Length: 202
Image 1 (cartoon, rainbow, N blue to C red):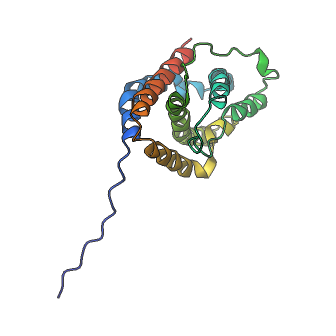
Image 2 (image 1 turned 120 degrees about the horizontal axis):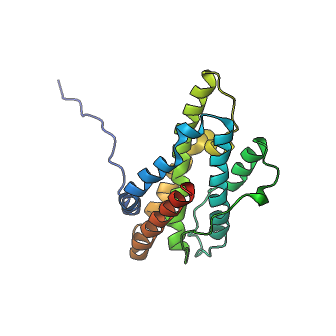
């Protein structure tokens, strides 16, 4: 009898930029999650609205900055959806009549070009994964009798969230041979997390 060759999954392709981003922002990511304090904000409708108001005040101006970035031909990440409109929809459902009255963050990370923009997008796109976890908590709250809360922002890409994240990771891999990106994108991601944490703790 011949031995059957064991079939194994191939190792994942190296992604130095993703690894650099994760290493540079690990502590900042944890502190930002603490600042969100999602369990406390899910306790009542007013607390949830205040949290989304904070997110909108950060996402709206930062996404406007990122939308103005000039990318070299074929360089821009594809299929990244703006989260500001999702926050606006949730806030409208929560009774906010005029988004223009909400405070916006002026202490944003400096985006000098597309390399820094990659770092900012890493933070914003990565948050969609955390949104899936928050949605599960929201479902448990509803099952326990809590009010149904609008969740367009935390739903983001819906069932395609994993697919979008994998596509973004492939985009990061495609820029892993750029030495400037390996330095400037992680620094911008760290600055984005830090700015968001400061804004949430105001």
